[in-house]
Amino acid sequence: MQKFRENAFLKASLSLGISRRGFLGGMAVAGLSAGSLGRISKVYAQSFSGELRVLCDSAKRAALQSAVDKFAKLNPDLKIRLNGASVDQLMATVRMQLSSGTAPDIVPVWPGSGVPLSVHQVAPGGFLTDLSDQPFAANTPAFAKDVIEVDSKLYWFSNQPSVIGPIVNLRVWEKTGLAEPKTWSEFLDGCQKLKDTGVVPIALGIGTQWITQLISYALVATTVFADNPRFAEDMKEGKATFVGSGWEEALTKYLDLEKRGFFNPNPTGTSFEESQQLVASEQAAMAVHTAGTMAGMIKAAGHRDFVMWPLPGRDDPQKTRVPVGITNGYGVSEGSKNKDAAKAFLNFMNEPEVQADWAEITLVPVLGMPAEKTDPIYTGIMQYVNDGRGALYMDNKWPNPRVQEAHFVGIQDLFSGKASIKDVLGRMDEAYKSA
Image 1: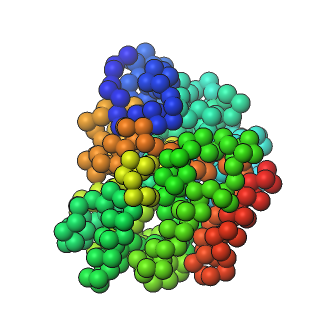
Image 2: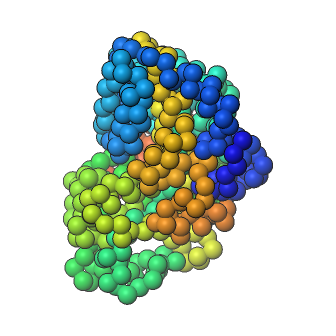
Image 3: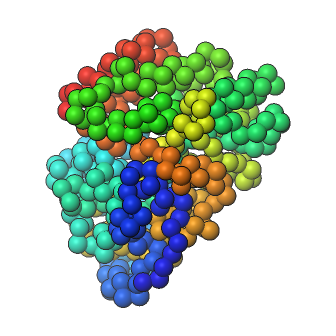
């Protein structure tokens, strides 16, 4: 098997207490052997026919389109229909489609159990096809098996990790003359300097629900998990709650950014797309997003003068942690009428050439990629992950989607003055207990 050096995202395993041997033992995404490629070729190079319906989130449509186009050339008798939708739309509609048997052949799936389309919510209902016998199953990253697999079975293809932090337009930030902030106080000072010059420090589009969680997660990685890396396990064992934890500190700081006027006017009436445009057009300096949104930001701005930083949650730089996780991937609907083609397409997605295209289009490395292929935009933030200073995405280990929904609505209520921080966290605790 061709050997590839462990890339920055692979080293995320170190932050989660996984040994190098244990992590790499479950990885081979970009280094499949010639024999493996031959076996997979026999699967996807067949002449599939009929229709294959594929659904994805809008942010990944361009990368998926590239894979679809290549697969279609190999199978000219197969009609492939690719559709994209926002994450909020997917969460609201796909579960109903799965229940009614009207879902596309390939549907987006998230890790863990914290959202409506997470694998631990969807697979137990019999809505997804067991893919454990597929060639790509051997590449499941060991550090995230408990949030990717269900009862040691694989139901979806996941190929890409992600981090959360400020995506900074350097053409705006560098006008402050300040270096990258390493502490919460330095971050606030930078925001104030930007505000004083008439620039919006942080673009926030929480009119799009899933955006509400990102600043929380970026702060909680430090205010909760720097002190207690086992917080998720403690909650499961009834030893911890949201109320009375570092979540209170994180939401206090989140709300303080609003009180200081560091967000654009009317964040609850601003969409994700509008917040991206504010940063791309240099009306705002940054937005706290996932790594997967970087490509869209660069496309909108027309330049690559961007960087992704950790959000320092405290004044001790050694306490800073970065949220890291596996991004959403793709499963095969149990009701699919073209399962063979769907499985073949997911295996095709695992081909090194297709994976390389995916990484180039999204700008985010895929699991198993050589370290030198990591985009310089992420060099700084990934150093934190390399050093073992990462925290798994918070919702991955929540027992049900109601916790996330309480969080989404709670943040919007905080900004509109309808709830206090303890109200919001109390609702989250109740949702957690309702599992």
